[in-house]
Image (tube, rainbow, N blue to C red):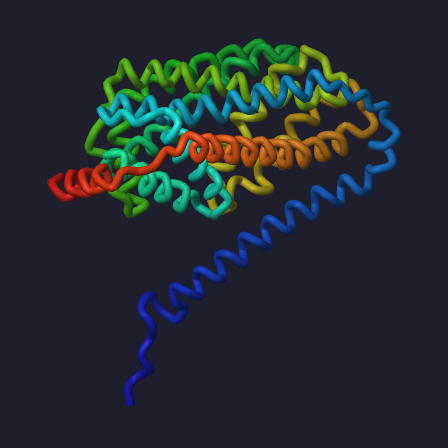
Length: 343
């Protein structure tokens, strides 16, 4: 009598793997937030003893800067599609980008990508082009994030006191730009895609367009950092000298969350990065409880960013409904026919 038949893939079925992966994600996120909340709870007496000074103008500034960040990123993706030869209307394009943004909270960002691909298809954008546009978007975000960190950190007095060699990190921007050249990006990107079992990139943007978009995203990483600084200044008095470390926090948190992609939207990871970096900014002002303050603000930042995201999604979707923008069936048919004709 032979051994019992095993399901495809071994003893553990794909459904079981999915359940185990989800359980691991929930466990990791739960442990991270338990640690963060417990640290805040332990230092709560010190936090409440701080002389808080709420300033509405800083909160409004943070709201405007954070909103500009998300709007800028949505327009950036639309520009990438236009450079590929597939322009789409501004408001519908923003609708697609913002609606897919909510899928970031699903592990791996797969649903975010596929949702964007499916929603933009009725506007005549083939699947291969929309997938490539998202790949370009992520590559540009990564290169510009590394560049933003390398540019602002040497301006931080604390690092200058450690070593003047910190200025050597300014070699990073030229390297980032070099890696975005089609011949380099194509090899690196396609190598990664093959390892992940994904389709390779066959079409590339002109290098001039890539460089323009690279600087475009660099500007918005600075905007993101300023938005974070304004949010912290809403109730605290951290100095302008700490602005570089605060600005570097946002691209650094994003990069780390991309590396640890198993956690949806970097839950727990971004908070850990913010808690670490903001600790340096709070050290001089709150020497006795700067770590507790940093952790508290890391949690508040997540809440604030999510609130801004949801608000912008609601506004954009509401504008689409008010303007009565509808997807034409003819456009859908043309899109599908064009994709079927693609070799």
